[in-house]
Image (cartoon, rainbow, N blue to C red; front, side, top):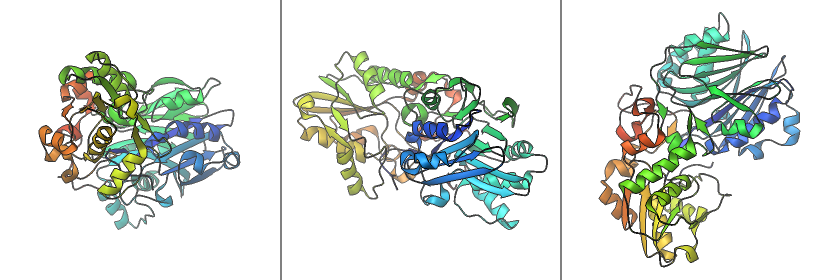
Length: 466
């Protein structure tokens, strides 16, 4: 298991492809490799050769799960793939995706990014009707509902089920001869559409995967839209009425790769602007600006430029630790910070340092980073955060701690500053974040910063399956 740090965790990434040259598995492998940052618990690929579906999945990173021999054993021109982060209790091989199910209408593979807030109620209803579940993931609830509604074809069944789903989902589905994608009516989770040079189509959580396989970006899948690739042709229909765009703001703060473009906005530029705005809102006299790598780098560059303070590489990240590392308990988490990050003492010694991070959730990582920088000889340590304080949990597919563990929900900024041991602390304002992203507050989900969600939640009493 690779999992908990002082950061919220994206649940997963999805990928789907129609590759007429028959290289679907190899291209999906490359696409999942590009999406590895979205899930490091498990990986899986399902392919179709037009006759049958084959699935291979396992726990581990993409290159750990798939060998050249395994990929050669997955022939086909259609494929979907998935990389997974678990929420608590949703670990292990059984909960890895894609899911491959068999019904009276044939085989269906499914991969899901998001969280249905009514999954527990739907599961209970299905169990009363005799359904038996093998996993803890929402994807199995979705697959069971699709199978039960598949009277006029899988696309019609999906449209019917989208009227029932509540919450977030970016779905890729695979049948013997079709690739299907769907996005929830709020567009909470990202899903992009691309084309291959020799003909073919790609669905992916982020555009960086398109770049990796040499595909071209076509457009984003719209909220509530269903796209179908069949017989080499792309078809689109409105599966459910759009309910107003509410893309997760944390895609721009932390989750997405900087080279991705989500709903028309470049992630690196959004983070850069956030750093510039942060420097305007929380200036400080200092000698050096450094980043908490890697997700804080773009904002730190923006902060340094706007503040007129030199930017330097003051911390080295051990990239072999992984983006997150499961470390139950506070002491273990702090040890993992030292394993993952190490200051360059010759850079920070004797200097007044501004360290820019993307977010603070529990505060344990920030506390340890400040201690490491002081031990390395920093004269002053000023922490700047390119997002507002996280004050509420997420219910839409992001694994965040419970309310009582969120340092921003329990403390004012001055108390957090004292808790992490910084000389000063500044968070980006909500207005600054929205302006930096450039999409307008009405087009973003900001629930973890405001406690106001685009989908009604019942006092937090919701399952967080993914």
